[in-house]
Length: 537
Image 1 (cartoon, rainbow, N blue to C red):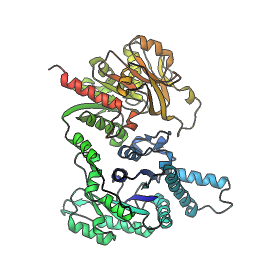
Image 2: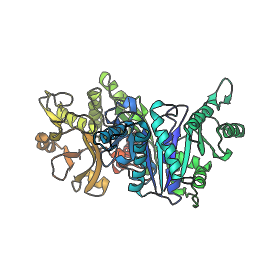
Image 3: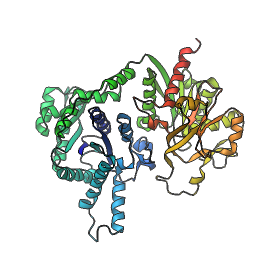
Image 4: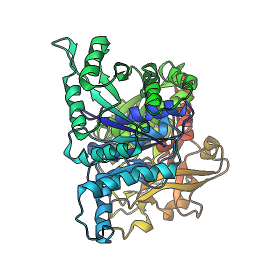
């Protein structure tokens, strides 16, 4: 078993997860099996109760684990199937250590960060290695070297490397090399200090990845090599990509990073054949067609809040050889002005998931515009619920129709709390989470898009369609096209009289890949392009 540890320095948000995922792509294309793991130093048990403004999107896995958005990169870039074993926080580690102490596992010893916390961290590495059976485990350490909460993780991987032995561990350190415009030069001092901090802990990086806006040049590389004690060829330039994050594997390959990793891990493997990946890039950056899609959300100003949605739209665009221009529309803005001013001219409208009542009326306005004007519509989770509310109000004429999440006293609660959620008090990890089966009606739009009647999609919600109104909706042309096998929970709705109107209670964005676009997104982009291409002048 071989192990790669990715750490970060200087500043956060350097893209360690993206680099880990891109490296995973290269190693898979050299014939290895790979699994990836994220260690987050925060004390939350998981990001499930954190605000999107704090943490961005919560990425849900098949087994219901609520995880960091970097795990989305891991699954999109590689063939690995992740579980809760691939995501660990300080909160989980300390929770387990305290449980062990209460259960007497430590036999009365004084419980300390070293060795008990560090041992628990190492156990999670070895457990994942054994469970996955992969050739290589890539572990990303969240945060920045120097953060006090990250020290136990760094100490743990230092100890782990010592036990694993030379040739079995590769340390990759990602830093930022700022360009000072007034001086007209790149500055290496922040990186030097970050590496010095890492070496104080006892970790010497084998490879240094330098994020930069300007080319490093030979002199800067030489300086980084000398003062960071890293081989010249192991100083990797990673400039900001011009078009797409999916260019990163090709960039790292040009820098021969995968060769360096294989040499460090004593692996003799053929070069990665990235031909198919190059074709993906071509369709992403030089598509034959273009389409504009409006994403109506409440966290629009935060790019990472809808990360998987945006990526899924790009994947679907590539599948249709169609560039996707995403128009980010703040839902609240549609409540105070004529919605058509912002929605007119769009090829399609998408309403993603979310919680809370802020912006809900604006999302309902967007749904109504799409339904009445024939603009293709795709609703995800909350996007299905607001589509239900809109139809109830404006077609069924159910005055005050709403979700009990937003109005507990609604006369027509067309969306209500799931029965299994009614007595739950604990917030964390208690929603309907993970992969669940759905049966699709034969002949429905959903069945045509998926090409089958049995599907599995990931979920993260507490509220559901109220079956008391089901017959009323279907008589009016609002079709329930997908349900759970027991026919109790509504999973998919559509309006057959509309050119393309479909919504799901699930989060299909979590299963889309650049080389395998999700069927709902692919069909949505195809319909959006068709509308714009054939619309009357």
